[in-house]
Length: 395
Image (cartoon, helix red, strand yellow):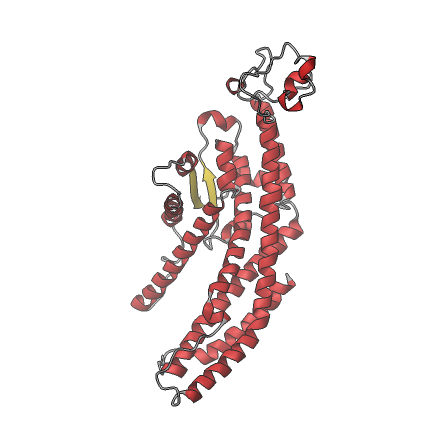
């Protein structure tokens, strides 16, 4: 169960956990921005006391994530034991430097672990409390590796989710003019709106092309990492851990380790048991749970001692880290820079949408904010957006 929890929540095999965590983090960031703006207006002078994220806020984000996952359960009476156990064991906290972690970083060719600062704009770490018997098998260094992989996969998922959410913004993709009561009197106004909409559509073509290309790249990267690397490595490790799945047989045909099946039934391949047909070829580490194996020879000694499990798990994490390209310094640094540019690109698009809506209110409805310079700010945002688009394409 512990390994399955690590796979579902740290390696993001349970996709709804990643989506809920990203959504709750974004809601928290937006609420903090509103509170900071209100605080600066009330106080007049800004301080840095309310800017830094506290430990309690990070914990609250995870608690709201668990609540959102509980609402997505298909049935009210259904109990998800893994979710309940993960809620008790998994914690989200601010990152703290530890000497044991730096040792792992040096031995792993200086893996870029700065992906943990993308979720809440401050470094956070997803950790888990390991029960007493399993601390011989899972060390703090292993948990740090899981946390690094989690931040790495979550950052890719987060950037892809933000890019796909841009297509939901109707005002950016297409301007729909509001209906007017007097058609003849407002014909000139509608003509200006159409001209303005066509100009914005032509200017946004390059933006949407870059967004589509970046979303496609992240989608393919996430699909390969999650579907091929993470799932394939976990299936291989679980097969070694639990042994191959025994083929289904008819009731009453229990395997026997002392005798072979009769010669008259050897031609029936579906009724044969692979272990009884070839007794010398037995999985080396098949008997992890002796009580769960029917017909298991009592003289068979399991090879899953703590030392073997520890070495196998270290090898599993090492191969997973290499397959995810986390040990490739040029790739991780380039990907981290690309994700930062994508965040800046999306922020500028959001700012541009707000400015264009304010300009439309000034032009169409006459709502003017005397303290705002929307036309000047729009030109500056367009200039910065072109630079950000070139950075994303270059990455």
